[in-house]
Image 1 (cartoon, rainbow over the protein chains, first blue to last red):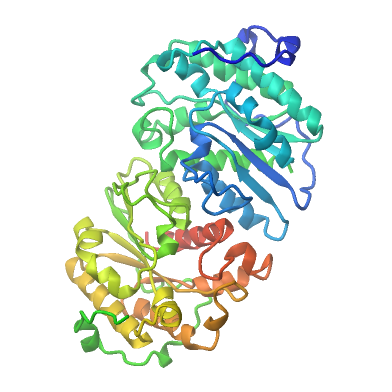
Image 2 (image 1 turned 90 degrees about the horizontal axis):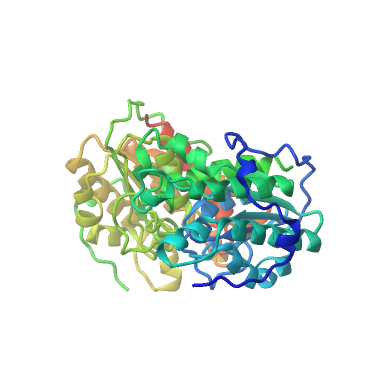
Length: 251
Length: 251
């Protein structure tokens, strides 16, 4: 399967190899964003792949729909957000779709991002950009991933220069059933790329990979993420906590 | 529709009218249970109606199944439980079924409770026992509800005298679309009955009705429970927090 080449902005931004982006991901990186007072009526959009999708009912696409958030970290944290910010008119959408890679977000970015006019974009994408090179003969490289991601965020920032972004690191949990081939260093380059792009755009960055690595010391991969890619309920709660910390750093 | 008369234990326990049970429900009632060290390998079972069901995939019935907890308060809190008690071998089941009244739990209690051998039973049931008298020509009364509930818990305690129980109060949120007929005092009797039964069995009691009443002062019924019966995501998170507080009082 060939990816569709849709972007030139990414090539122009041209960070090339991400070998220099191996900065530590041990802590949440929100320093680049000055906290502000949270506005009323804000819109928060979750975008990504199956981890964000969480098996959601895609027919229930209205904001804050209790049937439309799936069963993963988004469901767990959206309730908390709406509970803690009752009366603020917060609108929250989940538009993660299982199996997606970054270039597939582009195909639906108008409808599933720009038209929703998010004030906060939460984006976690990348595990399939690597995984499908092993399993689906996908030919994208880490540079393709990174440049497409840059172009997508350029487009998003152009539409709303004041948007706040939270980038979740693609992760794999060692010991999971499906990820034995993830630890030769290649997948790490995708993680470093997501960090570099987050830094480039002043986005909050959630280092899920090291968060899961640390958690798995108790209970093992099976407890947190049985196949190494898709979190368990415990893993979802772990992500929800980390996301809330990142979000609370924005305002 | 007639209910099936299955119980004599309840009649024997015979608390009759619950008019005397109008004790305050403003705070969690866990005083009757002495906290203990949490055992390893414990089993927690959630039972109830649609609020507990949360649209779960009933084919995914294994313990801790990330696809089988639905999208309601159970999904939100099970992740927290498994995160906070990693390495303890905790097994959690959701067996709520939409539309059920207490007598329908009895029909499936062997398979959906006793065979699972729960150490903790979390039970919230009752809104349909009242609601279906309005909408489905159901003929059960509050005494039927109460006596059946007593019999069910007697049976459960007999099977495991050491079981801990958490009883959630049936609730209705004033201003919700479907509950205008809930506030003539009749529904309150079901609430008081659930509290009386919780006290009788030394169960922790979660006063969801007053919890929602308090929460709805900000954001209104629509934010927390649009139809007055089924919680929004915010309402689910509210319930999850209250449940965690009750559970943490047990150990």
